[in-house]
Length: 422
Image (tube, rainbow, N blue to C red; front, side):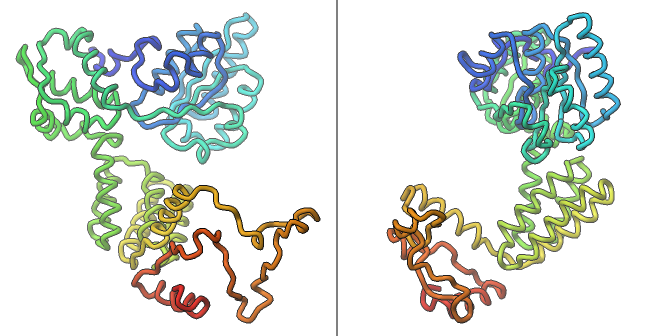
């Protein structure tokens, strides 16, 4: 059976590896460790199709170490322990310490991750994990503290073009045809920084034509992909287009459209927690202070989803989606923080006013730290007017209440406290 192009073109050494120069380029941290003949346990964090699995295999080949692979989707504690037992047995015969590569390690439960701790800590195995999710949230702290984390980036256009050229000139199957690449914009756009996606599209377009001479244009790429909707996997452009349509439908207060796009993601096998995270962001960014309960519900949705699982979790996602779509909207908090960050970048580290500084020591008190600070609770209505911004930006205003009932009430309250400031 013929291997897919992406597998046939999988690099076998760092010299063939394209992209991630910050990790594998000359003088980079990972290359130095490989040249020294030793690597610690580490986690590769990055989007799909950027070379995480390939890099792990190259490390094992370079150091001539036994290489075990587990997928977090279909492996359990029993599988982990079996490999650890094999590694312990091998150590009696002075064989090299094996590498255990765990793909999608973020899907491992706490107990599964716990089962790795002792083996990693004692050096029975070298763990290499791959994840598309932030390991700070998805990997237990004890395991994370024992691993380096290396971030992989989506491949740039120049990397993708280099990969395409390499495949056309070196792949045993593609070399059988004369391929004339006239346009690359669609190829690059649909690949979305994903090398595997690029190889799949290239193979689809070239092999869809029985002729020995094949022309690649943007129109042909679009046509072939429309004929083969399976080519739009959840890590490709369709993934980003649908989540964009989903969030924009919520922002536009259209619950029917939002539910439709949710259904598309559910049927397409999208990660439910990815959807829940996007709902959390939307609750803060788009609904915001117009309905602060939206953030509470979105957070409850995320937690409930982890407890309930699938397929019932779709109901929790649907409830939250409709609630957010039908809520009043405000991005005042989102605009306020972005405005404040822009000013911080412009003005730098302005000094904290003396009366707002902490004064835990006598010396600090002698330097007037905290002097003349007015404790709000000592005053009527728990408020007293004083300045809280650096003197250089006293007149700057970041939060601007928007036109919705909740913020109108808040603005009225602030006006009673501060007068014309609000």
